[in-house]
Length: 562
Ligand SMILES: Nc1ncnc2c1ncn2[C@@H]1O[C@H](COP(=O)(O)OP(=O)(O)OP(=O)(O)O)[C@@H](O)[C@H]1O
Image (cartoon, rainbow, N blue to C red; front, side, top):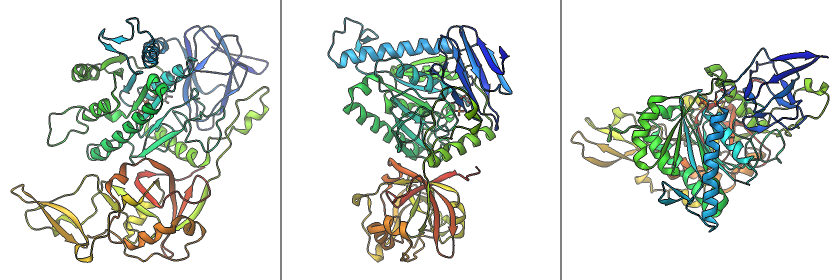
């Protein structure tokens, strides 16, 4: 209940209650605890007597395990307190995971197992918990993941928990459209929408409004997996899994700490990823993620049928399926709210964490400090210098050009190069976010002699026999423009040898398909296109040369409206 005295606003919290708020576009508030007992936001303790900024559009809650008094700088229009919290269930789940971590650590360090380090009484516990959280849209998956991470990182045990983000719409630390892997070292704060699971790969030192999270990213380029994009998705998930395995091989603490995986709500669709050659398969992408990360615990939020379905499917594989209640506080996010969150996430990648609002200057007392903003950099780069690729999109001769009765089979993960001279392509690229990928010598497909300069395309005849045929001069494949000279400072710096090589390979995608599921080096966005000069204007997070001039496009766009 809120009370006002001497222009101060206090909220009294009963033991085991949470204060929930939904901030409007113009509401920035700060909160601080004014009682000896601590309060928590997503299981991260509010620092004592320090103002904790809660910025516009944020929807969250502050939990008090025992009686607490909270002071807020202003009362949001939408706020209430409630004792119907899922915090006790979260704590119980955390304790079960913590036990597994401790036993795994004991096993890894060769300590006595005294019969406890065994799961099911037979298998020794050799590694920390591998948990995946599943549920319908807005059921609170990311919130549960964040709470579990924060409880583990606050336990004082020095855990190094892995966080895999398999929800490209709620990116863990990166731009929407990414899959990610991070190992945060400090509890993740909740100040704004920009980074639901921490801050971007730190080019700046950590501060108290973001967590120092070194994040690896992979580019899916779309907000959710679809059956059509399944092949690329699977490759990307495998890449994330390999990175996690590598991490565990090098760091036994990560192995003992375990992994928590956030997932896309699309995962609850049983038919997602079902292939024509195996039409009866259900939950194939869930099963793939479970195998890839050796998941042992699946947490299903508030969905009874899904829990039962998955239990039937996964129990034989030794996966524990737990039904977890949906928090009554979880807010149904509509399209508008999601768009705002995505725009803030992209903006924060380029400009850094949102700054602390001016109106907080009048608040007396200590304030959690803001991250220094980044210095994004805008420059022009020639169409021929920046090679923009799409993964898994058809971009070849039209089917009508094929022999009668035949159909084309293209690799579902093939790369196509965006042809800047085709007007449709250029228009599509405006405002597009691009993921920069590293290229090395082995990635180049050796140039084929002119008579063989074709696209290898399999043609399936009606008798279903596959034969290889070659189609010359694939339509829409490359512009064939010679590389421009003197593209400006950035270009000369960025282009170097690669620019020359790109110009040579104008008629085909010169790289192997693996480039499409490689870890990304960073992101840029195309903010302008000069058709006359054949140049893109791009925004990068920092000045200096691009680490590579090969970039992957998807369907993620961003226009800075601030
Ligand atoms: N107990 C709570 N009190 C207040 N707000 C909450 C609570 N739990 C979750 N929320 C809010 O509800 C919204 C939805 O939660 P969250 O993003 O965790 O769900 P999700 O299942 O991951 O969503 P998505 O559909 O994006 O996958 C978020 O804005 C979150 O901050």
